[in-house]
Length: 423
Ligand code: HSE
Image 1 (cartoon, rainbow, N blue to C red):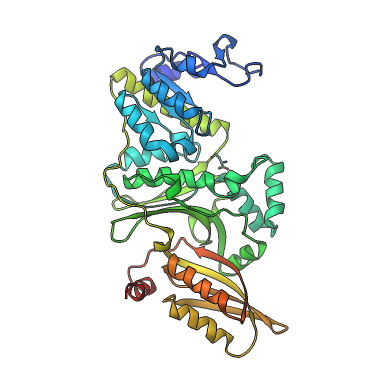
Image 2 (cartoon, rainbow, N blue to C red; image 1 turned 90 degrees about the vertical axis):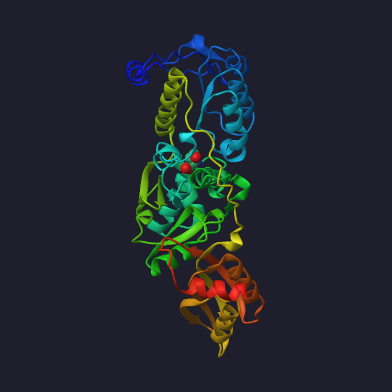
């Protein structure tokens, strides 16, 4: 604690002393870091026994997992920024912390500086959260924002994001949705008081989003965002968690989240709709979240108490993606001849998927057809698309995108579909 030391001491009630810093490359120049505190032996550092709080910002599963559990074993609380580890091993880590009367905090693991974990774990502990919907990956939001703004294709926008330092040399974790899925797992688990791991989250990235999809979204008064959506089922008996690109209306507040910013909507019974917005990545925003957790962990140590542990008492199962109900935008390339539209409409009807709008543009015996549906289950939509692909007159199902960000209707086509699929 070489800066803000007095402020931190005043807020905690005791001074914080920096005991050591474990690094991989000790030779690197680190301004403001006392050289005598730097070590390459992280295990020895966390085993010292006189450490109250360990801050883990390594990322990945190992050695972070072993170092965290060793820290608990030696009496330290842990502040982590490690979304992958918490999403995969959160339950085991919480259990290890609880056994040792230690804290595990990880505000920085989800959406950088934006307070989300603490509001969900603590501020909303008396409410019932039904939905968490948001943009939790800045890199992909930057790319989609560029595609929307300039009409650029995915590769061109990715190149720009890389050149500006928003995308890493290997952008897989961001563009394939792994980063957002880990955050969705953490948010869903906390929001619904149940266990949700990375494997429970349906994940689709943005690599297949085309300039044509963005143009089509614009024609509908929408834009395309990579969304993380965690929902409690209408009957309250299960939850879903998913990450995928989706069209959202321009009137939705998430549509105006530009560049690499993050924003998350939380919908709760009593609180109503809450929106959290801010920088979701970067050194300073991450440091802000880490230090907030550090202050909390230190205060607890002084008080001889611990903060909230894992809350998974509701034991709600995570339903598969097929159970998710939403609207869809489907682009088809079809033969432009009599009866084709009727054939396509029949396939939708046979699967209980109600069509909202159809737009057709014909050229030289071929036509492109854009169908927007009412709400239907993902399973019904998948079966519809499979059947469409089998039609001789359908040359290609060019794209399928979910349409989100509209109110959950109490009545209407979704219920019609549910009756059909329940028969
Ligand atoms: N790479 C992430 C993003 C930040 O682009 O939002 C770290 O989770």
